[in-house]
Image (cartoon, rainbow, N blue to C red; front, side, top):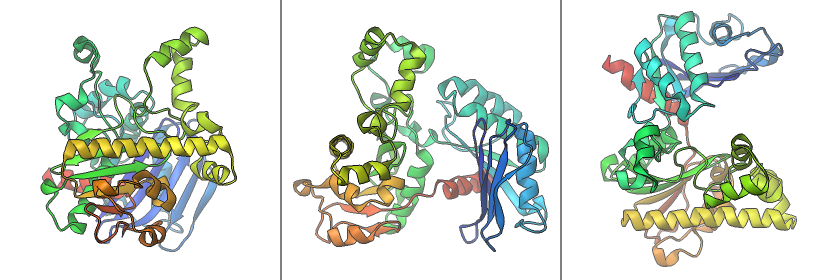
Length: 401
C-alpha cells in the first residue's frame, strides 16, 4: 500500500510517496515556484538514488504542477510506480481546521468549501492547500484524498485553556481562541510513547517539546491535548527563528504609535523580524549557536532566552498535569542539539528530571532515552515523522469509507 503525502503552499508543493508496509519513503521531492516562469522540480527516487535537481519545467498553476508530480512518479526511467492505481490514497497537510475539523477527513466538494471558509484563520496556508487538493482531484479523479489538520489534535483542550480573557463576543464573532499547531507531530510522538512506555495512549501524560524553526510545546493528558503553547496563530509561545513568541500585547500598540507602523508592518515585525532573528540578527539556529560559542553576546542572550522560555513552559505543564510519564524533545533543533535538550531541563532534579549526559550526547538524530535510570520522569529524544503520521491517518480514513 502506497500513500502520497502532499504539503501544498501557494507556490510550492512538497511530496513524499510512502510504502506503508515498511513505513518507508520511496520517493520525495518538491515542485518549486509554481506560477512563475522559473518553476522547477526537485525529485529523488530513494530506491535507486535517481532523481532531478531543480530541473526547469513549466508549471503555470497547481493543476499543471500536480500533473508534473504524478508524471514524475510514473516516469519509466526515474519513477517508482508504473500506474496511479498503485497509490492507495493521497494525504494532504492542512494547517488549520478551525473548530469544524476534529479529525482527518475525506475530501469532497463540501469539505473543500468548508476548508475554504476557514481560510481567514490561516490566510498564508489554507488557500494553497485548497488549490492543491482541487488540482489533484481534477488531474487524478480516481484517487481518494484526505485532509489531515495540524489543529485537529488540540480540539480536546478544555475551554479554560483555549478561551482568551478578552470580551467573549470576539470568540463568538471571530472564533478568536487558542487552536494550537504541530498536531500531526504530537500524534506521531504519542504513538511512539505508547510503545516505549508500554502503556495505552489514553493512560499517558506527557510534555512534548517540538523545537524547530517554528516551536511549540504540548501538555498531553490521558492521551489527549490538554494545553499547548501556540495560540490563535503560530506566533504565541516559545522563541522561534523569526517569531517573537509570548510578549505583552501592549508592546504591539506601543510600536505602532512610536514607529508609525501599520497593522501589516507590525505583523511582519512580530512574525518575520523577531525571535532569534530579532534578538541577534541570526535566525538560523545552527549559525546562532556557533556565534554564541564564539562569544557573540546577543547570540548568547538569544540562546538563554530561548532555553529559559522552554523551561518555564515545561514547569507550567508539569503543574497542570501533576503526573508526567515522559518529557519528549523533537523537531530539528531538539533532535540535533544535545546541549539545547540539556539546558531546557537542567537544575530540575528536585522536580524529578535528571539527564544522563552520556546518553544525551549520543542521542542526536536517533530515538533515545536521555534521562538517568533513577530519574522520576523519563526524558526522550524522538525524531518526529509528520509525513508518516499523515499517511497513517489517511489510511484510517479511507478504510472507513
